[in-house]
Image (cartoon, rainbow, N blue to C red; front, side, top):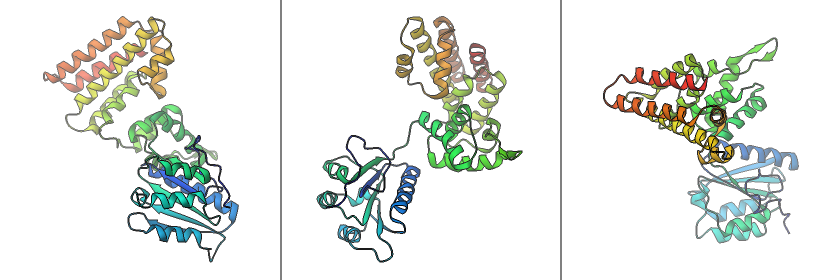
Length: 342
């Protein structure tokens, strides 16, 4: 009887281990799938020494070829890592029962990894849970990406990055771990060292080296500097956002100002009425440093002051749509935010 892994339907998102015989890496975050695969390969090497790796394209491979490879003895090593990419095309009505039977009694000499862009839970997962694990590799939330960025800078690049700087990086790149990791390597190198100790990755370095790559959401990155309370910094970031967002993007930037003002109003009204601030933050969908800044504001800014800011944002948006100078209008709004926050 094959050795059962530590998988459990109660903990579907744990990292795979050398004890797992069938592993599903399902989700569109390629970086996470690659990282989990690398972690699993290292764990298998630690447990079995040299291992052989076989890769199949799920779109074209026959299930018999995959299972035969899993069950046959390796010629060069005692353990195999058998990977099927595009597994969402490999697992279907025909192959699912055979995979379930294999998972019920998997080979001790192989670890089967199914990597898929999408993975639909079903009865197959119950069989896999007996000998392995299904790992979600979906894109993470921005707040988690910020924490990951800080940990990754230290662990992979022997560097450091503060929460505000990590937030700016995530704002510019989105919560794409592959892009963040690539930029972290460049930034850590550019930051250099002082007396043999690595310098932290600074905000200025990020603004200089990392271009905005988020497309539909790029105007919304203005919300972080609007909450800084620093007029000079806020105006500098506003100009960068307008330059990078392209022609006509002053309207989405204006919407971002209105959205932020509405969140501030909601937080201030909630605080004034004695509501639990954690509940208020959750209802307003606040995250990261922005959440903390708005919560601090809610304790010292009256609902009336917050509503006046929102009214100013709405009037500014109407003025822009009536042919007012958009840059000048947004600069005035940015200074109003800075005056309220400071």
